[in-house]
Length: 501
Image (cartoon, rainbow, N blue to C red):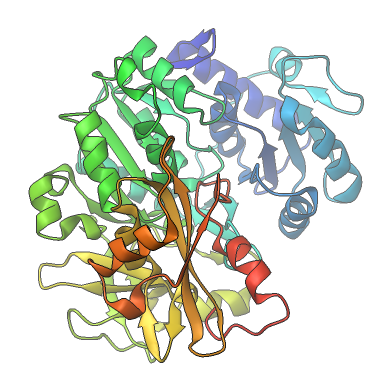
């Protein structure tokens, strides 16, 4: 069942519409394995697209709603996409893309208004189509091409199979992260593989899907109270905005029993404040990446507590999930001793086929004997818990010492006046790089730079502490809710060569 605004559909209605939309795609001449894209905010029609395209024996290509026309044109050109769905928010970009992307034969309008010239109407396509049988693509067949967020470099298309996604779904189901019969709030962007993995798992669990087009804290709280939502997936920045919203304690959020989060590190204080706002909620942290469809590790509810925080477990992203192997390796691919920092290498049935049409980039991360290099630096303890220290490219080298931004961010964020923060390295004549924190404060608070630096010095070594604190109203976020550190670093490194990342 789907609920999107005032529109509600039963399972029977949903399946019929998916079969008709798949039939419409075949009638338009979409052939087996051709790519069909969507550039739209969340909706029930987006979920229909996610099922109808493989039903028609084609491949998905969800576009990033935060990208410029040029970035999306690159992805569509790179994947030679044949058809594009757009909603009201992206009509103008859709028109530009139809002119720029030579492979595009069809643009379908999924919005509520009058169909723009040169586009086809989504509802008319479904109404006039003959339903077809599911193509039942094999498990090894490519489900879709999913372009990476581009926060550390130019995007690459990740080719993921049906088996890869199914493996991640099973991981979530077995761990109890998506209960049977759950009412799932889908507010994380649907183009992101994290929402897709949870959403597909919820379908297996006979869920009701409550859809919001985009994240707004009060709309989320209203939806939870109205529909008695018991499960949702949020990224840490969304959790922060929700938990620290002035009206958070005025809504009835008691139905929420399961909160899955991931996509970027979370600060310990945010977890503790979430547990205080939502007593009894089960929190699952999922660590992974697009290349792993996406789940690699889970930190379950039993490790989200004040006691777990005292043991340092809230700094962990959990242990490897079902059927996934993880090891920490050095620059030569050799496993390092427990407790030592190295790069996370993973393998399992949820691993990508490779980067679309990019054999050299694929070979750089998919090494011999089936291991994939993630680009994340981490340690592993004797009990198998993984601790992310930084993206390899985000590590700060100051005075010959390595500083991991996640550790500094936890120290800054533990101050009660801090709502969000990001730590980057900026040029320093003396040290090569120096630690710089960008901070968003909670409403009504006015901490000073000296206060926050002194607070950090009580928690971490002096060389790790920020030399400067920059206060901002917001942080730049990707479509997946990750802080875009390349944007934060850009003005400092203009015309300079950065030695790390």
